[in-house]
Image (cartoon, rainbow, N blue to C red; front, side, top):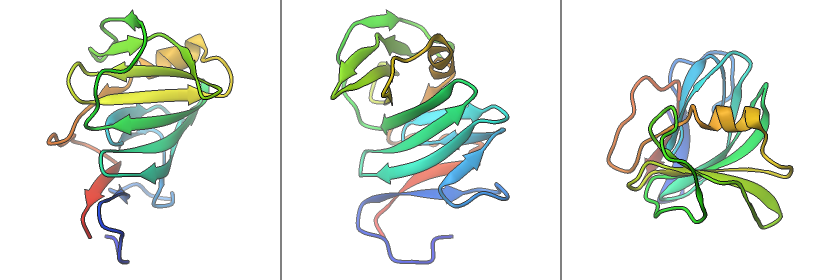
Length: 156
C-alpha cells in the first residue's frame, strides 16, 4: 500500500508478497512486471526500479550476465534499426545492437505497442542477449499475472 501523496500520472513500484527487499527492488527468483517488460528472475538476478512516467519506466537488471539499464514502454512505436531476431523465446522481435547517446542498445518489440530498450556502457554480450531473449512484454490495457514486483500507473 502506498501511504504518501504521489504526483499526478506517475508510475509506482508496488511489492506483492516479496520479503526482505525495499519497495523498488526484487531479487530472484520472482516475477517482475515493469512497464512493459516481464522478467522471470533467476536466482541471483535483481531488479532495481529507477524512474517512471505515463507510458513507461526504467530499471536496472543485474545477474550473472552483468548489468543492463532497461527502459520499458507500454505504448511504443516500432524501434529503430535492423531486425536481428524475428522470434525470440517469448515470440518478440529483437533489434540489432546499435550505439545511442554513447551507450550500446538492443530493443525488443511485441509487434504492437510494447517495447523495451536494454542499454550498457560497453557492448552487449551474448550472455546479455540470451537474458534479453527471456523477456516478455505487455502493453497498456493488459494485466500481467503472478507479479512479485510490479510498476503500476497511478493518478493519485
